[in-house]
Length: 302
Image (cartoon, rainbow, N blue to C red; front, side, top):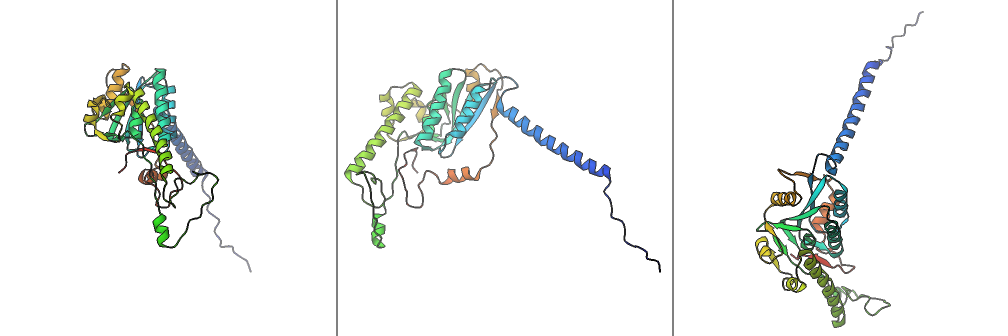
């Protein structure tokens, strides 16, 4: 008896179709590569004539790396003739504020580019510290600025621990090693030492503003009691040069370097970062847990 194999042969994908898929895949990769390259070229400011670069400093200032890198990159680009710092920040850490300030001062001292600050809703404390280093400051009339001062916030939970029957035991090798401890009452000597640190950092702030703005330290000291100003009040106090918005600041920067007509603006496209979002929301206000160290801040306290 004959056996008849009724199994159908497997369907074979035609080679032209496979080739088409490969071509489409290669074209897709090429498109992505060209898009990325075009973005890098456009953001770099190397081509297309003289431009104004825009750097945004927004939220609580906890790290200087990104702003410093942008400042250095734009200084190296021959197409960038001016930089506008758009500051919308209540301030932040002392050191990152000082590092950005120092980089702006270096760029200003080299004389290759002009730097202009545009103040948004708020440019206070560390935000103003950075702005003071630029050639010109433009603020909106209602911008909150100033707050030239230093703050240290420490929690003390000694009373709470006593209520719940918890005792803190500290072993230390130096008299002042636990002077900011949240587990005991601060002594007069501890407070005097911490006040001395704050006074010194405050004096650094005053000197930075005086140097950046071309004012006498005595003039700045009279304004450096932590008070805030509107943009209009700050202009009268010589802390701000002109009143206007971001576009006014960009046009001012263009005029300072001789760019005629509508200036081309270059801005680095930043990727969304959940970490940065959380930092801006929660940093600078102290942990919900017991703080473990001393934090000095050029920051407007809310």
